[in-house]
Length: 272
Picture (cartoon, helix red, strand yellow):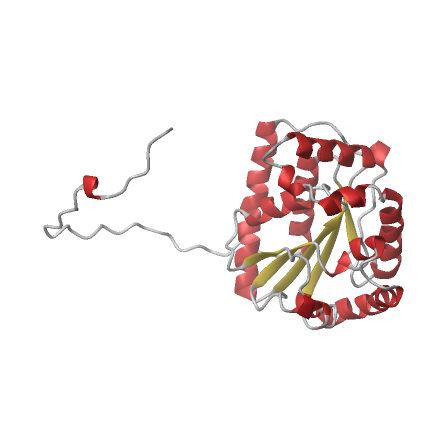
């Protein structure tokens, strides 16, 4: 698994992709994702994909694009909330272990154990000792996962401060997106530099040869989604499996079945 080179912000392609072209390319990639899904099930693979990055970097969008055409019994999305009091008393990585894939599964982590190196570190939710212990144990933990046969893939979505500001404002202006902007997001926005330093330190410890970080330039959402999915498909060797031809059989005969009157049922108003 080789590293990809990061792209300097001024060199990133910021041109918009026409909607029809984007949808056509995404459709092709999603068809390949279905083939990959069947291969994972057939070969009994265990795949973990981690999506990290700043707030509004576009992690949720690419996760949705990946998962929406896949079988949720094979491809699961894990987005854990604030830990409970019991979970706080456990080994830090314990609640994440419970969500690791079984044979023939792929798990997409919408944020992961790297919360400790990011938001917990910056916002003071963990002690210095807990943070240092995580930095020491995380590479060892990930090596254990890899040795156990799990394929671990880590993506960092890189977004500029100007683009993040624009997306935050768009969430404020759109009632259907306002829920995405939490009090924690607003507090994190004020600590841009602290997050940058935390990310740099996290990479210094955890961007290893065995488990590298792959950086996704994410100022252009559509390009980020297409590039990330294309890269993911290239990391896992797979083949298209032969599919059984599906033929619809005749429906059973009515045998004098009489449907109850429609008027006897409670029908919702047809407003539209």
